[in-house]
Amino acid sequence: MKKNKILILCSFLLVSLILAACGTRVLPSGWPGIAVDGDTVYVANEAHVYALQQSNGLERWRFPAEPERNINFFAAPTLTDDDQLLVGSYNRSNGNGFLLFSLDASSGDEIWRDDSASNRYIGSPLATEDSIFAPNSDSYLYKLNLSGNPDLDPDWPIKSQEPLWASPVFDGETIFLPAMDHYLYAINAESGTLSWDPLDLGGALASAPTLDPDGTLYISSFGEEVYAINSRNGAIEWQFSTEDWVWGSPALANDVVYFGDLSGNFYAVNASNGNEKWHLEADGAITGKPLVHEGMIYFVTEAGSLYAVIADTNGEIDWRQSHDDEEAKFYGSPLLTGDLIMVSTGGLDKIVIAYDLDGNEIWSLDPNN
Amino acid sequence: MLELITVPFINIMVFIYSLIGNFGLAIILFTLIVRLSTYPFTAKSLKSAQAMQEMQGSDKYQKMQKKYKNDKEKLSQEQMKLYQEMGINPLGSCLPSILQMLIIIPVFYAVSRALAATPLELMQLHSDLVWIPNASELIPLNSQFLWMDLGQPERLAVSFIPSSFPIIGQGIPILAILVMITSYLQTKLMSPVSSSNQQTPGMGQAMNIYMPLLMGWISYSYSAGLALYFFAGNLVSIIQSAAMGSLDWRKLIPKMGSPTDSHT
Image (cartoon, each protein chain N blue to C red):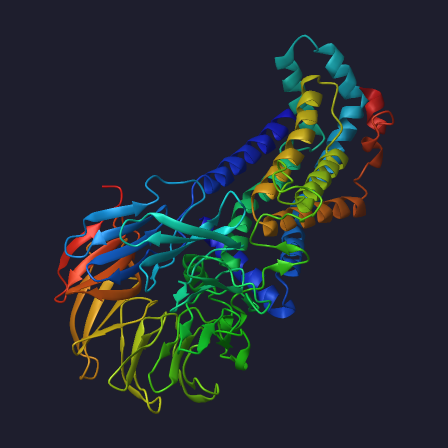
């Protein structure tokens, strides 16, 4: 009997140790969020937000200077017209709320912080001329002014049925808000009232819609569909079926919509009617919005590859740059700044890699070195 | 190895969720399935514990204890002989407990991965849901159950306690308390009665305190979904034992003890 109890006790101790080990540090739960502005690249990853020099990756500042308990970042920062850098945190602060920070984009100094939210910031906030719209995993879209004061109108914050992971987009009057509850909401930015009935798109919506100047919204869904929607009335103009969930936003260029799914299929679809022009099979899941630049389309895969495809062909791959390290995973949307493409990574010590337009690695950021 | 257990657990939980649309109930039903599938081991263990209790109450055992009270090695040898004679496996009674311990970690991962509260967890869930057709219609799973968010540590907010108050300032951990109480009842009611071997009662008493505290701590610190699994599992174990006639409610009242206590 004594042996039995010792065995059980040892099992408990083992389980305690393993569970305790699970909780001792915050494991990466998102990929680095990147934003670019002129010659500065902003990267939100784990304990810090970094401002880097675009040409060589040298660090200009980091926030906070030293890691702080319970503050981690993954959502891509957002720049306002008055040079604030907005970035939401992934952890509950000591004061209970999840923090949205406003930083001075040039120095990294904190301007204000808001702790209204009760869950993670996964989607980036939207900044308009005079307001901030911050989607949160607690299902609320928070509205603040540029000084960080919440809108006290009883119509705000707006609540969906499930978490908000995607950034909203704004056409000057209406906010278009994708939600994980499968609905796309159209909300009047001033009054907070619905402009048209929420639209069920058959699956979770995890990325921002792309708004065409002509008023068409292109939005991807986990329901294995990409939709073109009339932003004025919510009418579906066409929908295109894919093989798997579509996570990243579609990109629009020259009347063609580009997007990829989680099985690694990359599609080019006619923006007017939703007919497929071509598709290719990449080496891994595609989670971000493709980058279209000077007749080329760039996208990354979870297998750690950066693809360059010639736009006016039937999906001809100009080059593919696969990372040497098999553990490398590329997530999110590649961003262009100057003549460099910024790629956020997972599975490596590096958190961001800058490639030139021929796929050569120019610099990378390893925050620990 | 862990993945081999965790991935089927995730699929079973999500499949149940697809039928009933409530993840809290899915966890409870999943617990029932786990307990029913490990029932043969539990039953064998309870029988083994009962046989052990009977053996410890027998005259032969008591005489042996007195005869070799100054020779622990010989006593141990004689005890093993007696186990063999009576067909008792001394390790048999702890197998279900160890099995449950080994299942905790995959359950812990399965609950948090099924709820997929972050992008990388959702990417992982997408790969995990290999047996669920139309999984995209179910995602994200609704993590609300009663007052709980099953993906977060459970607290019942109460307005009259200031938020700066230690431990319960963020709310009362009702589920963690229930897990502690049911764990205590389970260990107290189901643990075999100690023999006259004086080292064992101390160990048993330590287990009766340590296990509920540990389960309570895990339930307090980790997701409510895991705590719900513990709570439902404890209740099922107690009910299973009661149905088999293995519960001795008198153990809850120290003065009454159990029939075999009189031998010690």
